[in-house]
Image (tube, rainbow, N blue to C red; front, side, top):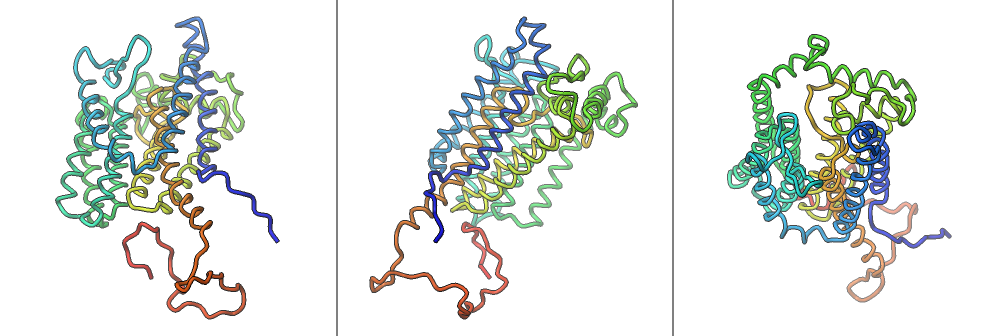
Length: 417
């Protein structure tokens, strides 16, 4: 007789643990990487840590609210949130409204201290809209009535992000949208054509701007221009190399002392490698792999297509953005400015990412709650008799046609068998 403990939660606890571990590690790295900058600017090394911690508390509160809200109720927010995001993306481009830094206008200032990056909100808004809209039109995927609006909405959001300019974020937006479109039921031929079109457009945008073209050429050989375009790449590689297997110790790294541009945002993974070594970087990679696994699991077990598409979009967004950031630091792809989710400094990025995790938990919670409710209700035959489970290992005859069948998601419309 096995002792069965009562189930106290239907949330994906391993997913919560992974996100909390990334968040705590991120707070430690933000404090370490920004301490010297904050000390020079404000005589307080914990300035950026205090701000990031405040955003983390706000984001965790929003995560709890999103996780406890049925994701079907969010469909009423899909269109308004997308419209607001597009308006904010356009407002960033207005001179005097958007805050420019490093030649790019990506931020809006709200008051003297608080700022936000509309592109982060636009990612979540587009995912929420596509998850709701594609889930309701899965039977017409492949027709122009669905493909054309999908292309127009995705191109509008990505185009405004490119105009900031922020090509790296635009690539992530397009890749996430294509992944959601594929999961919704697009054919391989159609998906391949749209993917090829996106790759050609990205290469054209990379070549047309001189500084982007220089980044492409320097990517092949960073030491060909070590003082300008190759400087950041070389310093990030040095940071990873100096860490060795176990790192120089938390707070003891040297790469953040004027060598790495943006050490607590875009280059924070290099600081992490310098201070925590190969062990620390592999730990971060493993945590994001676990996040990808749990996200895919939630998508496969979703009770409807909207939840599956929504979970796919959130998972691809967080994991792909993390991969791009780490690949840039390791010189596996050309330089682009993009943050490492839950670890890099940035209030809007952290808060929106935690809200997205809350929605993912809501999608994963729905089928578990349904199963728990069904398990409490005894199943009966039509004549009122209780149904008893069939005896196991008694040599019963297998069901006809049940051999070698692959399990399909419950929301799949394909014929089983």
